[in-house]
Amino acid sequence: MTAIDRIDIAVIGAGLGGAAAAALLNEAGFSVDVFEQAPEFVRLGAGIHIGPNVMKIFRTLGLEDRLAAIGSHPDHWFSRDGMTGEYLSRIRLGDFALREYGAPYITIHRGDLHAEQIAILPQDRLHFSHGLTDLEERDDHVLLTFSNGRQVAAGLVIGADGINSMIREKLLGVEKPRFSGWIGHRALVDMDKLRATGLEYEACVKWWWSQSRHIMAYATKGDASEYYYVTGVPVDSWDHDTGFVDSSREEMEAIFGAGAHPMVRGLIDATTEVTKWPFWNRDPMSLWSRGRLCLLGDACHPMRPHMAQGACMAIEDAAVLTRALTLTGTADYRSAFTLYENTRRDRATKVQTISNANTWLKQPEDPAWVYAYDPMTVPLH
Ligand code: FAD
Image (cartoon, rainbow, N blue to C red; front, top):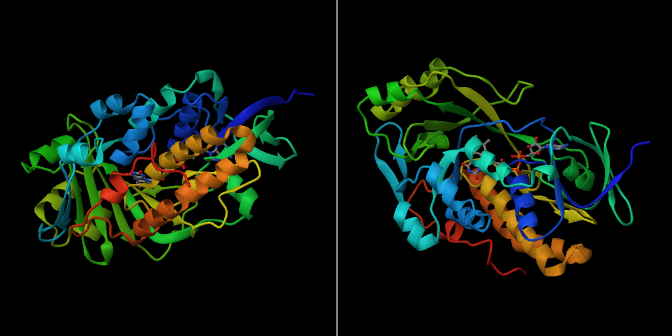
């Protein structure tokens, strides 16, 4: 019979939220292990925005300067009409963000971000090839069973296991996420072709059409050597079993090409490889924790990605949860989980709602409530 290891805190999932939670808890002096189903770290995905709200958390972890050196620092988030090019809004970022919101706003390759997050974790506490397959809540621990047969008795379990979370299933029952009715195309464009257009592409710009159909395009490196776009397109259904499927320049042309502004045309022409992804969703949840189990990130409040804040909310969750546990100690985890949920629920739900509505920064508006927020100092209530 294999021995059952006893540990204090188990984080399930080493995605952007789970890696942040493990790093923050470790930094705060807790004994924490993180279990990830994937066999190893892979540089997945493409672009991601990280707002000043979350760069303040990375400051605590000693990552702010590293990420700022790698990422792009857009001066603005522009919203433009996809046909005429007319500017619908110009949201100031760059030095303004640094001054007003207290940290930089960056756009970065998601793999570069994740690699930095993984690298700061104590490697002997990061367990790949550990897909959680079962859990049993007992009086003084939770018994976790993993795909490799290993069993662990954990004092607390943090479910950072994404939209199909098994921890969520234990708390709220089996329920598949709902197809949101939207898909996104994602592509890193061919830089030679993009440069050949002779056009000056803005470092962060969202092109809008009617029905909120859009292309969000931005640089993912500070030296402007990589440019990425992600679309949002309403569709009737998603009929594939896989997480994503190949798309094509022709499909981009068919959806966005007719009458498009020359800069949009240039983006489409510079498309070589493009994939399309379904966006899944859930309604705000009635329960964030029970007993020794607690959720964060997409496991708890998944959203369509149109506000570029989903991962940011996961990382904010991680920061507030760590602060709550620091205040109460692990023995009083119930109070910590209550503080955590009370502090996070309204903000996460508001971001989820606006993200799903796809209205963020389309018109001039003040984004300070998102970007100036400091998860490291916000009062816990
Ligand atoms: P995930 O990133 O899904 O991580 C979950 C982890 O848990 C994975 O590593 C998974 O392998 C692991 N796991 C799952 N089940 C198990 C199990 N049973 N056992 C062990 N491990 C398990 N957010 C932003 O902030 N800014 C953006 O610009 C942005 N752009 C986006 C663009 C697109 C197209 C999409 C789809 C999303 C975007 N998001 C963005 C949202 C962001 O990607 C998610 O909100 C974020 O990844 C959620 O992080 P998470 O750690 O909660 O979950």
